[in-house]
Image (tube, rainbow, N blue to C red; front, side, top):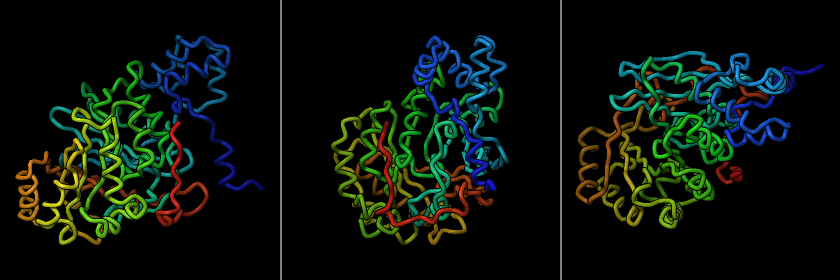
Length: 376
């Protein structure tokens, strides 16, 4: 008898949104079709947001019929949308195998930013992050990353456009680099989504072997989750630090040729009361970041039920920022967005049950067991 899990896997087919425009051209040529038909399909999928082959009227019926037999065009559906009092929207999205992820749309006066996920859960188990408490189920496909953008765009008010994209949702993007790289190619292709690379930011806790390959994909921005000034503290907050400690992380960033004044690193530093918010911590940061073109984002801890930490008082936050300003660092205090719907930094936890493809959620292993996929 075929199990439900086997049945789900048997139904899964390749998805056309796993392919960039150039990859679609190669796919079409391999099937004996003109490569420009791949351009036409990319325009329908990414520029027009159409995932119904019957509506792609400039593609010959024979091509549409063959594609319909062999490929999927949809990978996610919106299960629920929550709206914060500040206008932030959190989308709960279900994949074909039942797993659920979250994406966050953040409207502002001059821009609209989407925060996307790259994994179901996360294997890094950062002690302050709600996503890390979920454990890890699987990587998302390129199609599932791209569909987050398309689904979010359908939620936007008429006349508004998506201007910025941040890979800061559920998961560690650099542990899913092949899918993330192909998604970036699709997003920055002038004939697809046409997002300027400088408007795309990918965050990492510091998977060092993948930083260089990521920055070769396109001139996007890199964000690094630092959160501590000593290895002793960062080992607890970000267990990946035991494998790639602070000195090694910062050396890699100093030596990376694709990091420079016009393409600085965005360091993320979540302030936690009594953990990493001292004046001594603030005084150590300028020396640590010396020689790295960078900006520092300070984020007071956002509460969630799994967090053993809390935010410092506003006075402590202001004192911390003042020390950094006096030292000449470029510092931004990040405003809470979507905190009342658990959509702020570190709060994405998909509070509803997550259906893993092969049973219960996979427990996060020791950081030494993490597998790093090679970039394509």
